Image (cartoon, rainbow over all chains, first blue to last red; front, side):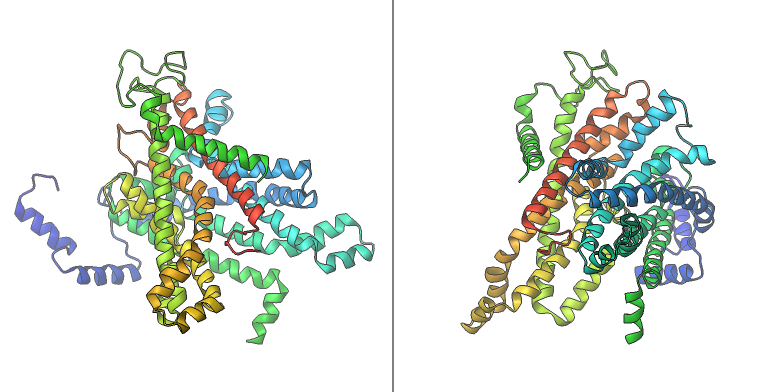
Amino acid sequence: MGERSSPEIISKVRKEIGADKGVARQYVGYVSLLLRGEMGRSYYTNREVLDDIMTKFPNTLMLALGAMVIAVPPGILFGLIAALKKGRVADRIISAFSISLLSVPVFWSGLLLMLLFGLVLKLLPPSGTGGLRYMLLPAITLSLPALATIARVTRVSVLDVVDMPFIRTARAKGIASSRINAVHILKNALIPVVTVIGLDFASYLNGAVLTETIFGWDGIGRFTMEGIIKRDYPVIMGCIIVGTTLFVLSNLVVDILYYYIDPRVRIHGTDR
Amino acid sequence: MGLTGKISALFIVSIFLISVFSPFLVNKDPDAIDLDSLRMPPSLGHPLGTDNKGRDILTRVIYGGRISISVSVMAALLSMGIGLLVGLSSGYAGGKVDTVFMGVVDLVLSFPSLLLAIGVSVLFPPGIYTVMIALSSVGWASFARLIRGQVLMLKESPYIESARAIGCNNWRIVFVHLLPQCMPLALVMTGLRLGGYILTESALSFLGLGAQPPTATWGSMISANRAYINSAPWMVLSPGIMIAATALCFNLLGDSLRERYGINREGRAG
């Protein structure tokens, strides 16, 4: 429908999409359709929004998983080292490194990685959707701030645990310090870390809007962004609803995970 | 405050001064198009090079900083203001008011923040006020929760009890006796979070939701020039360095303040 459409056509289309009814009626209509899994069609492509989200979601999921695989092991390791060497050179280097990573905007670090590995060294494709080679750069870009957050949280959490009496007991019993670090300290320090990992993962599932846009990764984030630029409201609404639902669900999964990681949660749980 | 804290503070102060006095420091027009010098690499005449339309990048970075920093600071103060109002009423009134307000706070915090900010900015025409509204509509919630906690603690203290005993009404207790006690905490938390505001502001500008061309902001300079990253990387490098350096200094300053005053992330003394 163009700008010069006749009033008859405008009123016909308004009737067709239900815009002639009141706002309340429209809202009820939208929610009842939504409950039946109907999110409407894109104004531009006239394709079902839900279908598009379903085809793009695996890409987003893959990217989110890839980023977490890259971020979690070094994040926990660096955090542990920083805490065990508190105040010494290693700690200072890791802390400086992680706070710098947190201060760099991802759309800029992404562009720099693209320039270095994609355009200057030509090791990886600079952008596009596809297999592992295409995924590597956006996944690394996403993983950097996550790695830094995980390292910082692990450091604080390990420092909390190190001073606890049961660690002193373990040392007094003569358990090897490598075993104390790996088993006694880390296991108890992991709970806040799991929370952070869950939150990061949840926000990546929403589509890393910036990273996906830069690298032309065909996921939910780029879909949302295209919808926003074109003011394609069914697409924006659909993406935000699906994204928020995923976000809340992943928070729930994290809460359930506590039950398995932390015996204290289990004991308090049975009290009620 | 350690050395890093001092250096960061110095950097932040100089950035502020440069932003305030920029018209006196540079004599070029940030939006002046010069088609004879497109995409020139850094030189004496243009220390940071020129962009796709021949505009001087140094001038644009300085003028862009004015917008990026003032929008972030205004948004942070606005979040603080809303957070103070909601937190004070929620904590002092308790009961149903508290339940409703904290429900809304939980709702806001359960959204992924960048997505919520983008969603809010779509509702208004793009521009700096839209970015301020978007940033503060996401940011106020954590302030509100923090202030509520503080008020719950203060509410039981003897001086509030005495104020009530000598017949102060609720308005007077909240605004004369409670508000000043919450201000230091609120201001420190505003400072701690400015780094995050700078990053989100630049992200929204990058996505084209902020100040519109030809006005420069750090984020929009990166998005406008990113197509030329291979042939003219200087156009993207300098605004990015400024975002990262400013955010880093705010974060470092925040860390050293936090260490010094023993405030943890949630703002409670610990």
